[in-house]
View 1 (cartoon, rainbow, N blue to C red):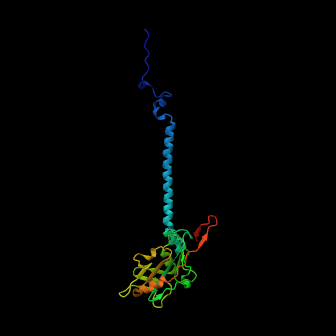
View 2: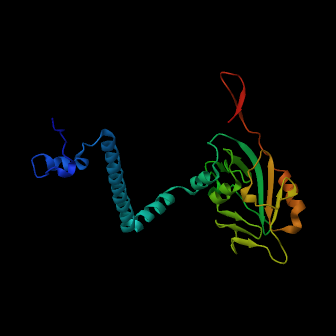
View 3: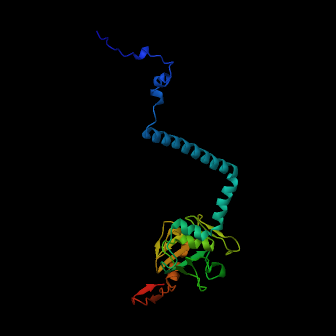
Length: 247
């Protein structure tokens, strides 16, 4: 009778024989698939990226802490280097020079005396809005979006609901004119009392503005203001189309 051959069980194998140890660790020594390799590479790259970013951020933060005073000082200096007019132009996002051109008249009367804007300290004090040609009352505005604040700042004039301040020498007694029990700051636009902040107003062509603390003489001042001539804005013909544009 032929004996049946029985294959040995795994438990019966002698793992001390050559090759048996490697077989016993087959699970742990399987070759890494391409997918596993890519995943591990991405994870490793992500970890490295986080570490590098952390180091760089820490470096920038440390640099700022060590040089904070110098950096802040440079920021302040850059702002100071910018003219006050340009700061306001950026703040109000005004148009380019030449985007508008209008004329308006202004009369400022303090203690019965007219503030003469024809004096040299008030002439051509700004690019976008100014007085010119020694005219004591005619405002020229050369861009859109320009508030009166830009004119006032350039000539050293500040107007609030309670006081009028003049930076340049105007009166021998004071450059500050404030309301009291006998007088109040009065502001009129085109003959009507103006109750808002006049410094935020953008002039329109032919506007007439009165600013005074001489409350009893309003009608006289308005009549005088109306006598001022406001010149028409000059026009320049277009060569190509034949139309007129403002200059």
